[in-house]
Each structure stands twice: as C-alpha cells, then as structure tokens.
Image (cartoon, rainbow over all chains, first blue to last red):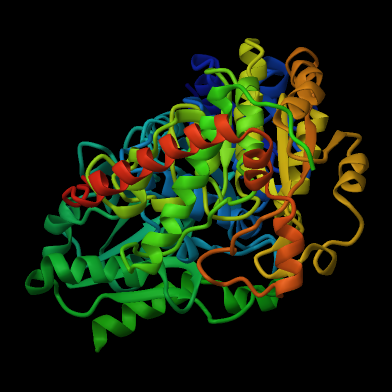
Amino acid sequence: MSTHERVSENLNRALHSAIGADEQLYLLGEDVSDPYGGAFKVTRGLSSSYPERVLSTPLSEAAITGVAGGIALSGGKAIVEMMFADFASLAFDSLLNFASKSVAMYGARLPMHMVLRAPSGGGRGYGPTHSQSLHKHFIGIPHLSLFELSPLHDNHDVLERMLTQGEPCLFFEDKTLYTRRMYRDGRIDDLFGFDYIDEERNFARIFIDGYQGSDVVLIAAGGMVERCLRAARDLFIDHEISCQIIVASRIFPIDPEPLVPVLSSADLVCVVEEGTAGGTWGSEVAHVLYGRMWDELPGRIELVHSKNSIIPTAAHLEQDVVVQTADIYRTVRSALHA
Amino acid sequence: MTLSRLADDDLELLLLIRHFESALLDLFSEGKLHGTTHTCLGQEYIPVALEPFFRRSDFVFSNHRGHGHYLSRFRDPEGLLAEIMGREGAVCSGVGGSQHIRREGYLSTGVQGESLPVAAGVALTMKRAGEDALAAVYIGDGTWGEGTVYEALNMAKLWCLPLVVVVENNHIAQSTATEKQMAGSIAGRASAFDIAHHLVRGNDINQIRDQLDSVFAGVRTDSSPVVIEFDTHRIGPHSKGDDTRDAAELARVRDHDWYPVYERQYPAQFRAADERQRELIDTVVSSVESRPPSRWDNP
C-alpha cells in the first residue's frame, strides 16, 4: 500500500473491496457509472466490475434513498451517493421516516444496512447550494449514525463499520479531502504524529512529538484536519502552545468515554467544525462532555464554526464565512488569554 | 349492481374485514381506542380480490388505510386489534399502531408515497434473485400528489421491475375531492412512463380476478411494472367522524356498497357467514380488551 494514496483512491478501493466481497451490496447514485465514475470520481471502475449492482440513477434523491431502504428491508445492503451533501435534504423523509425509523418502529429491531455518502463542505467555490455542511440537520435522529471521511481513518474499516451497524449511516465527505493524501504509520509530518485513543479507533489523536500532554485539545472531524493542523503548527511556533487534535470518525452519537483522560489534563477544549452557527455539532459535543465530565473540564468548551450565513461563491466572500485556520488560531489565543 | 356468488372463504374474509372496521369505529365512539385509525369500509373487496394473486415470496406494501390489506394477507384480527389497542399479542408490540405494521412479506407506513421507492428497491432485489416474485404497493388517489411516486415509477419502468401499483381511487383524499387535487388522470400519468394501466370498475370479486389474472402473470414473466386502478368508494369517514360529504353524496356513495347487495342476492349464505364473523370479532374484541398492555424492548 502506497503511503501517498489519495483519500479518494482509498475510498474507491474500499468501495471496490466491499462490493466485491458482498454479493448483496448495491451502490446507487447519479452519474456513478463508468466512464464518468461519479462527480468526484470516487466510484470509478465499480460499474464495470459490478454492472448488476452499481447503478446510475435518474435525478431522484428521495427515491434512490427509498430504493436503498427497500434493498436493506430485503436483507441486502446499499450505498447511495448523493452528488452533493446539499441534496440530502431531498432524501430527508426517506432517511428520517423510513430508513432510520424502521429499525425500531415495528416493535422488534429490524437491521437496516445502508450508507448515504454525502460530499460536503465549501472551499471550492461551488456556491450556496453546493457547499454546505448539513450535519446539524441530521443530529439526534434515533437510529441514524453520522460519520465523516478522514485522512486518518482507513475507509475499509470505516465502510465495514457503517455497513455492519444495522442502522442507516450518513457519511459526510469533505470535498477538499478527496485530493489529499491519507496519513499512515502514525506520522503526519516533521512536527506531528498520531495514534488512536480507543480500541475501536473511532478517535484519532494528532500530537506534537514529545508533547503527550498538551495545553489545548481541538476536537474535529476529518474535513477540518488540515485547518486544525495549520493552526496548531502556527500556535506552537508563534507561542509554544501545544495542541492535540482529536479526529472523530463517527461523529454522532458521540461516546465521550475515550475522550475523558485526554480532555481532563488540558487547559482548553475547543470543538471545530465547518457547519454554520446555530444548533451545531459542536454544541452537541459540548453538551455530552459537560454531562460526562463537568468537574474535570478546564472551563467552558470553545466552539468554532462558520458564520450564520449562506455560503457565497466568490473566493474572498466564501473565506469570510467558512471557518479558516485563522479563526481557530484566534479562538485558541483569546480563550487562553481570557 | 349484481354480484356473482362468492366462494365461502372469500365471503368470510370480506365480512371479517367489514366487522373488524365497524368494531373499531364502535370502540372509538366508546372512548376505548387511543390515537387515530383509518377504516376501509366499502373497499374491503379490493384486497380480498387480490389475495390469491400474492405468493408467500411476494412483498405487499400498505398504507394508512391498511387493515383490509393486513387481514387479507394474514387473517389475524387479534394481532391487529392488539396492535391498534396496544395490548399483549400486538403484531409490532404496539409501537407502530394502526398504520405502521411489519410482518414477513408485508409492511405499512404512514407517509404518503414513501413506500413506492422502497417497493421498487425490494422489486430490484427480487428481479436479481430471479424467482418471479413481485412487490405490490397499495396507494390512494391522493398519493399521486407526492413526487416520490413519479421518481419510483420512472425507475421501475427504466429497470423493468416486477412492481404492481394498486391504486384505490375512492375519489376523495381525506376531505378533498380528487378532481380538486389531481389534474389529468391516473391513466395519463401511467402512460407518461409507458407503464401499463388497468382500470377496474365494480366490486364483483370473481370478475375482478378474471380481469387481472393475466396482468399478474405478466408482471412475473415480463418483469415490468403495472398500475391497477380500482374505481372504488369509501363509505366511511377518512378517520373518525370527520366526513364532510353531504347526505346526498353519502347516499350516492353507499349505493356502491357490496354488503346490502350481496345480502339481498344470497341471503342464506350471507347471513350464516355474517353472523359467524360478527361473533368472531365480538370475541376478538373482548379477548384483546381484557389483555395487559403490550411491552416493548426499545432497541
């Protein structure tokens, strides 16, 4: 395995092995077939290898998700690609009222093996309807788990975890990650290394070599890794502030237990996400942590998120709304000085 | 209206559904039922007529007005009433209630149009398994307002799925007359997708079966979707006592009820069966009423 593998290649390879290994697994989505292979090329090669089970669909997000629910109801498994996470709004009823609800509403547990892949986030100038991070709208739905693509979590493991969960999963994939490289072997760069803090490897931890303890813990998901790393590097070089970055694979529900020892020795805990202000993932994480370890926390958990705004297209306007490295840097500095 | 003579078993099932639904409305007026329900009074003949066409390997999707569909497939008034009343022996532990029921090869949901894409997904796996099974979905005329119906029909035709869409067109969606909520026609909409459409008029079960025999066989052998539209009449309220139709309209609708017609034509056969099913439902009601509440191990 090359250490230089791109995130999209890793995901593509994971899809190939999952579909190859399970005769009952389908993949559906708009323009997913070859030679196009999906708007972000993540499904490249799949329809050629598995033409019966990898299907390009009409532009029908609600019904594609319903079809996936039917496959799951039949005892099969299904992966649906939303071309853009923004369009998951069109599949909301199917996810909320059928797929996730069916796990419990018929009295006995009904396993529903399905994954909705949702390319999300800004930074590419796609504008207000193709750039959102809609995580918050799907938080708190019984029997719906949320995951996020990460350069620290091998997608073979993540995909297997989602497909054996027995409950529908929504997999947010920050578009800017696709062309990035996967991190391997506990190494980020000359300054940072990483490990996992739990047996399940849900939480990766990035740390500065030689600084096992740290002043600041940033909690994030895969899409924020690069910005957190840059902020952590700058904070260390400029002010000798040492940061650890916790990167969650499953972001809801959150199990706080593995986080307790890491957070209880920090001076500052900060949750970072790209979603816009109001009802955020960060506020959910903070709520869970307050409930679990109020007395052990160093103080108020800082939340960094995008502005309460639609996401503009022009690069300078988009940067003003969407969380940047400087926002993380500034929040940490001012919280430590408060 | 004249009706051909039914096999005893068909008549018993028809009357089982009629007395089950009537008992529910009585229980509601006595304040013994919690929540809501939608009865199929007047439309019972549709699932009875279709039942012989369904095999064990088929999957039937029902909707909010689904008691007749369930009883036809399983003949289980006790489990269904226990579900509706939240008592021990409930099919789904009392969690789903009247409109959310699942049993092998059967599922109902409470959101209009939601089950059509799901049924298409089930039909997709059936087609690949190659066992000539089919998925059938009961919808109403009002369901055609939902976009997912068209998304699913499009895919069903494109992918040649063994999907039967059974439309119970009772000409009224809750309180709104169909001509006030539907432009064009169901036939026209099926035709837009190049999907075969069969219109069934009247409520003579034997004639309906003769008419549909080749249709069901065709879905299995050709693996292609069809729309079967029943021109039918709901003689009861949408839910409980919420009928806004005037007396003349209600009288006109009741003219289509099979119950008094069959009684007039075949009095001896009818009365014996009617008495048996009325008593059966009475027994079921008192048995279920006396049971403890259902239990649910929330997963």
